Length: 156
Ligand SMILES: CC(C)(COP(=O)(O)OP(=O)(O)OC[C@H]1O[C@@H](n2cnc3c(N)ncnc32)[C@H](O)[C@@H]1OP(=O)(O)O)[C@@H](O)C(=O)NCCC(=O)NCCS
Image (tube, rainbow, N blue to C red; front, side, top):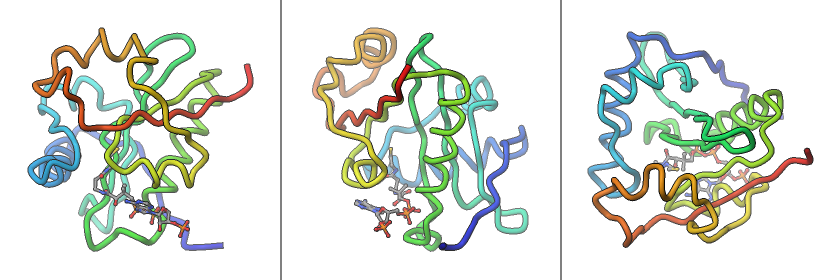
């Protein structure tokens, strides 16, 4: 078994560091930026990994509907990548989704193969109408999305 990381619920003090981590990758076009206001609003969605007091990774599980949740803002600091942190964050989000009785979890990503290793399969983003019409239409890239939808489904 590989290294186990200490995953914790985010607190308000983590929000600026979450934004910095996500912004760094967003500026490279690897993910979408998140406004600080949205991070505060959705802070209870976030899990983080800290090294002493430094935030090194984060991920959020955001409930969309009775049977649907999204993994968003998954980011691992460069020097912490390839050690299993990202996979453990995704597994923790999936455990929480299962415990809540959510059947489908999806992510929009430019790293579909990372998610496929964890049991997700690729899907058409338009197969996620709640996401598309709830949020995507506000995205500056809509409708020319450069992300791939990946989905995992649990038995009801
Ligand atoms: C994608 C990301 C979250 C992966 O996190 P990580 O901690 O490096 O990944 P892990 O070490 O847990 O990797 C788990 C497995 O996926 C593989 N993997 C990691 N990144 C991958 C990628 N981009 N593509 C394909 N496979 C990948 C690893 O080799 C590992 O495989 P193994 O189990 O056979 O050893 C991280 O690279 C990152 O933060 N990238 C920048 C932001 C981003 O793209 N976020 C995703 C947006 S949804």
